[in-house]
Image (cartoon, rainbow, N blue to C red; front, side, top):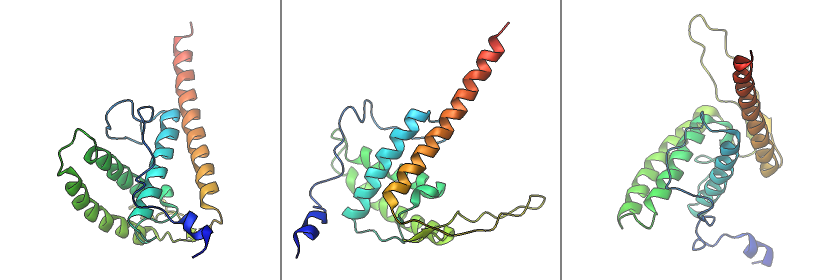
Length: 185
């Protein structure tokens, strides 16, 4: 076995990325991705990405459960976010000793849902496409689905987060500007 392979191999006893009081100034609470400020959105994306990376490596999850581009699919973001928060609660030092068993039971259910969503959206290890949307009667037909390939997942994730945060910041700025316009004499 080469030294490089040994360096890349995760140690299952290392645990997830270290969480400090700076990361969690208060107990975990549900994350409503629709209501986060731009700053909160960035922090949540980064924390969830670190945890999902730890999760997939620790449990040997295939791309059929957690694909590289999970962050492009809201159904997976909501599921993984809820699973992350459940994990934080289950492994909280104040929690009872059987809480991790409950998390693992729920994790088994979550894996089945994730497999379903991966199949439904068609994302793969080397490419991604938007989740198919069915048009209801009276709506315009859904746009054609096109696969996108990415060569560097980490770079793509960083660009994705920057774009999401910028979009959220623009919405916040527009909202606050509208308040200022309402207050103008």
